[in-house]
Image (cartoon, rainbow, N blue to C red; front, side, top):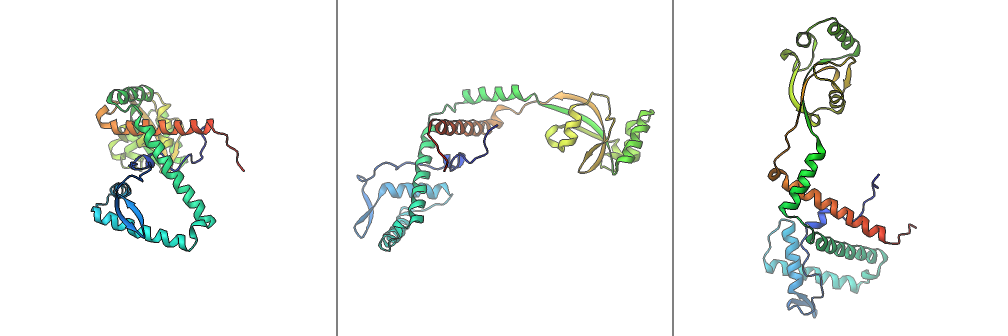
Length: 263
């Protein structure tokens, strides 16, 4: 069973952030200086990308002004000795780790094969594994188990299911003979879906099925294979699923190679 620990800062959240400019930018021209400390164009570009990632538009001047404000506050914090406080040191270490981990995940995901051919192969694999079905069923919904058992006894005695639904069912499908039409398991509450999945077409449940809505007597009319959604309509979901899985495996691999000792 997979561990429920949080394995890293994030997986997909990290992947959404652009990460140029993480190398030494000492050769980058200055966009401004604060008390002789340069704010480089590379830093401005990275900050602009972070604005864009948050859906904010900003001019180069606005981005530079933001960095100037950060720089004057950084310098003042150092003057006050805040940079050596244990909590600050720990937070800066974590932030550095986040940035580097983000850079690593970006580098890793750029190497993944996300071509249509690769994604379609995964799509076909998922379709083959799904074996999805749809069900056509009717039901009679009753408020208490005793009444449901009485109705089952009537059905066992030869009563017509549709007529019994019209007479007894408290659900909205009652007037239509309890007809629910075609549905897949995901659209029904789990207890109902599990019961239908084990039934034989043409048969009704011999014991009431309890759900949050009451007690059901279910008749399975028919089953059919569910048509999968077209590849193009789920391609983005497949891409996200593949990327998330690969990232998780990559992180687990790194953890497996590391010497980890919990204190």
